[in-house]
Image (cartoon, rainbow, N blue to C red; front, top):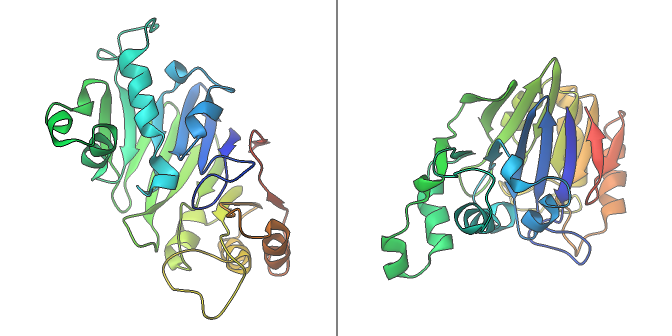
Length: 257
């Protein structure tokens, strides 16, 4: 299994990175975890979008899903598609509101929205607590985590290897449950540690390390660092509480799992 970073800037694109988005290669399957601002362009450096087998979304905040609208245009209006997109619909694994939310983002006016049904080129599969699904030979499972909207940590398993993506979350048992024994935890670290940080929003670098240690993961990858934070500070916090390998991810970087 292989993880390719499309974008890793927290809360929106930064000067050197798109927002959150990751490409996973698992055997013959190719799919994304989130598609935030700017990631659809980055995806095309690594894969023809027509080669995607699925897209998955941890939650529906814009910095994690806004480039889905670009994917809609690509699949509907590409002048030379390799196959009929309406006959071979792309699987979308996302919270249950995704069909309506994505249609509204793609067609914001009432008149245009009335004629928009994205099921012409997509098949939507609603994530629910504990749900599992297959993408090729890979297994995708969802565990709720603590964020202001419906959000899931996504666990990908393939041929005995496991990648867990935290999505966005505050400190919670759900992330530890999802990441238990994973080879790699791709985890958000969005601000320096403070006892005054709001609950149920994001993790500090220290909290990311604490969750990785509690889950017994093999390797921690820190992501979702906003442009206004010092990534080295968050890395140092995580290293103080997790004694396994830790890296800050960067756009276009690839990790073998």
